[in-house]
Length: 482
Image 1: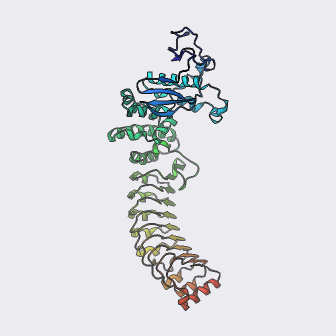
Image 2: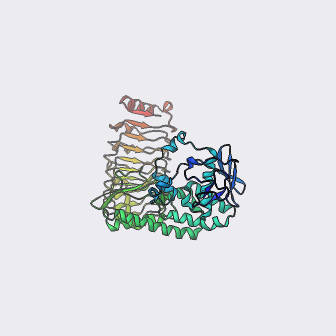
């Protein structure tokens, strides 16, 4: 719609002259002159009113202040209309045009009255076209549409969810991601949401297969899709992030993978809200590194044991209760990180991890370790802090490579004499344990560099033998933290 610059009368875009006063209507916003009688309020319909307040256009919904319009940045001269034929919405135009004007508003010279009528025209067109969200920027169209639906506008109620679904169909556009981030999916009930997720998964599946079918085996594409499919209802991560190959995968990666010879070798699903790990995880036969940190996993499938080439497994910060017996099949595993879960018992098969060098299981609920843990003779680092251990682990001479042992924040009362067999031990953490003394055999640890005993009930001044031991250790250049 066009508004007469003289009397403010609304005219159709095909009119050259105002139907009321006969004034010629100009198409460029630069040629529009303010109405002779300044109008500061315009009613779009029974629900929407625009007001010019202190030089700013303010939208009212049912006489309640809703939002202040920011600015007008897009003007389409009639001679350049063909340049915009490929744009399907205001969001498309906004995304593809130069944004320097938004960063420097000093260049915009539009009188408040003219800007007011521009906003009126935009909102009028939007209303008359059944609240078509392609006619306004999404960060105005959807909040306003929601508000109208909330106050009882029947037209808004009819189109609200349909407009959301339509924009979500191209799931990885800026508009779709805006709707997801702003929690517009919450306006669908369980049945509607389930159907919507099925539709959106089909979109994700189509895009993933289109992009990755030339570089990945079909079985691995299907395994990736399985992970997404069983978790998509509980996590919107997969709606706003495309699963794709990236150069480097580690615990900082959000979601992504790297590959060699059409096979995935590293895979990351961190901070994705994963609750279920499907059995198809075992189909990644060439997988060497797997990172699934900061999720909500409780159980791990037995098929995890199929990953015979796995070198690194990081499952920190989940809700894992137990490890499957099949964990022992990971014969090439070098690093196992399962910190901050709720594991109480380790399976006996853990001792089969003969290649394991770093085993970190901080912040769990372990009360004891398997008796055969001393068979893991490649261990260099063993982290057991913040558990419920009461006894010192069964670490004998078969741990020739153990360099770091962290037993802090447990319930250990005694350090055994046979600790002397840990000939490679460099750092021993005993902080926050009810230990009252340390054995003389610590003097045999020729590689020891740091001994931590902070916040223990050890009374050095009252125990002469203990004091001699510590003096001797310090004389050998060992750092003692107490």
